[in-house]
Length: 128
Image (cartoon, rainbow, N blue to C red; front, side):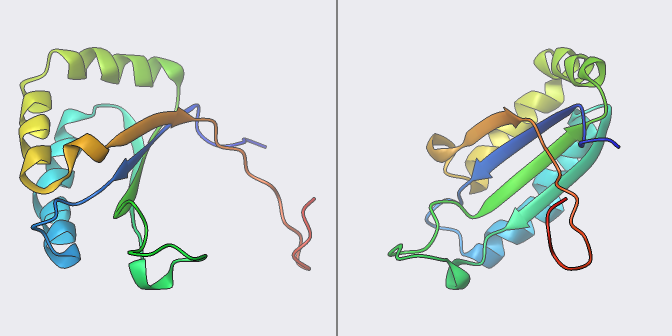
């Protein structure tokens, strides 16, 4: 059984203060995501998880420090490396960086590679 993708990138992104959550989500969906999909060859999955600021757990005044958690998957290390090599010289990458400034707080961007591990859960909700 596979424990997930070979490579996964997670980005924590915050909207600019002059954008409402709805404006941020709309710009991301209609402009930024299509641009990213054109710029990132060989990805196998691309997911945006918008944070429900009203359903935050714990005592955090003002909600979460981010507005979206974006996940990008590659099926192999080779696919990831090829994507990064292409991106480094891509005109689309320059467009992505320009577009980020249009709607994101670029100083707050956090990006990391992660190792995804999946636990199998039986019908009773017990981890196996």
